[in-house]
Length: 211
Image (cartoon, rainbow, N blue to C red; front, side):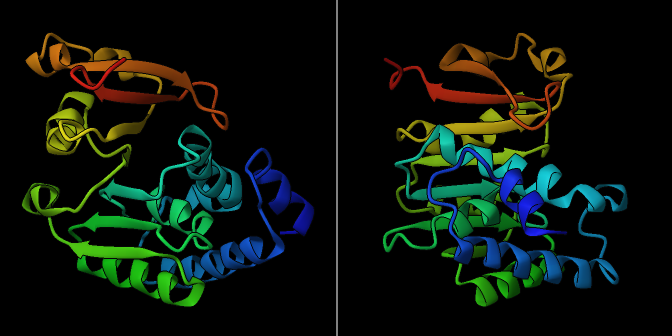
């Protein structure tokens, strides 16, 4: 993939340096290598890796440009959490907690972090087993992990402490807006994804913290 395409895929983000692009190339190469033995992402998405995965995840930084403490649920191959961490690599106080129950995916996340210098802490565990023990978190994220009510329940311990939830969902998210009690406790804002017009980004704030 040529540099112009790579740079354009990340356009609109602040301070995307050549060093940052180089880190994403390392990420790309490692993902393609691991993909041969571990199905990290859908094979059909690989040709559009920079837009479908990197840029799609990177747009979250625009929604919370000052945040330095992130937690990502069900990180998988690192989307969006590891992408966010690479974009925050130059901030000394930054850390992204990647929570993933699959130990092989955790091994992949750790290798990318070592090779890129991404400021992450990888938790090989289920979300519910570690969420209550996480340090101060400003942003909690997840990408296509589970239905919105379940995401809100899982992230409630962090939202109650003032964290902002930013959840990446598909076009059918409206069908998940049921009468689940958790919705009465959370203020939701729906945004259209910058990389996929049919996808939604949901910002969630515990109502006691909402303006």
